[in-house]
View 1 (cartoon, rainbow, N blue to C red):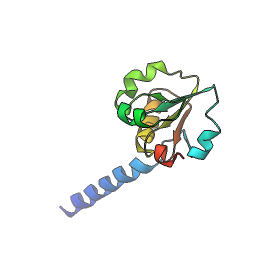
View 2: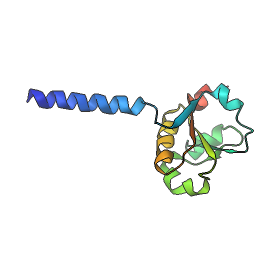
View 3: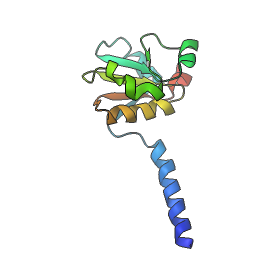
Length: 119
């Protein structure tokens, strides 16, 4: 019984740590670095927040594709161009980055801190 408790705790710790480890092959940038990349025509900018959040405040040039619809809407994105992803805090964009990598996008960038860090 004690072994099962240790196993459960180990599994729980693994899941928690795994959630916060950056996805392999995903570049992470700050909002300051993002400002230098906004005019790059070779990049696609995606905001994965809800339409309501996006409508309230967004960065010009970002297309709104909510996280829960990303898998079905990813076809509107080019796999030949880098995809820069943002959300409110950086958590949903990290999940979106992982999803995009699984869908075959090779160049994915996550904006750390999200809109909360945008000034």
